Image: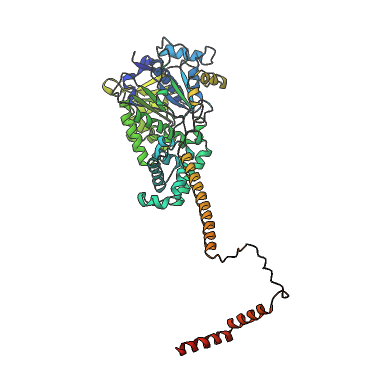
Length: 516
């Protein structure tokens, strides 16, 4: 089939080729199975098939094994003969080793080009999910985003959001009148969660230059689709950050890509490994958003493939939208496992040649129970399939080889250097500085005004004698130089000031008035 990805051989003797049709590849899919059953190889051969048909791929490399896509397999490899025999068994006549165009990405910038987004692009809903905020705390975060928009304060990195929350706490009385109560305790709780996130290395993820989606949707000079591999071995230490990032990327694809209907082949295929992390303890609002994205993003030409151990990890409403399925072996040791196995078998279109539930339990490593969409989007009959061998190297490449691939990429110059333009942090810091300078100037002016006022008041009390600021007492005249008249006058004035003097004055005045 020219318009399909070869998956493997099914039917009697594994001679019936199984294809994943490209025109139905955007109707999503599921790759499930217990640990060690061959899911990683299935991801590898699907990525090879899509890339060969010019379809870009984005996938997370949880264990580091998928880096081998950038290097061709070798005849010296220990599984060379088993791979060759398998290719002959399933009719893979043109099987040959080859490499594929790969771009390495890493949120921390260690094993790939840095991949970033801004706080504003992530949005309050996903950040609340990332920080595990309560409903009240999520409300305050929404207020912070709204006020930042109104005040013209770009939220680009974590320090912008932290500064915005500080401003919100300081101005809570004014802001609360419009948006509702803002508790200082809730603001402090959000700040603590941001600090934990920063310590986990998420500060490198938020900032600029932000990822441009077109850089994930490229083809090389030979027309092969670019395989974008996200280094996730370290990222899995922060599973909530991992799940939130992938959900953000899906949301960005949904928001930015135009409608294309049902194309002949997808514009991008997105593999969501460890999908259960997305739904563990997820609030209903988030699950509803994922369901909406999964339902509508296919019209944007994007196929989403969830990879997990058990189909039971995926909510039923989303599981029902996954038309292309590769089910590796499931173990049924407990009652819950047996129930999950039975439910997984019931989702397939039955094949009278075998029992589906028993087949899921019995398939070996490298085998799977598959069902692909056929004409008019009808699920195909379930088949027991031997997965084709990979053309690229099975297993990881060396750090030196990874460095060589990264050095040859033209995206390194675009994303390696971090930008830090003026945003909320710088603007609020400048406002604080301006306010402090204004207060200092006002205090200085007030001090100058007080000095002038003191001098003015001192001028009103001027008696003709310059009053110094010295605390020393004025020197008295010598008694020897004091004349007799001055002494008598001094005594008279003193007596007039006393009680006797006041009586004499009253007597004189009284006599004068009586005389009238």
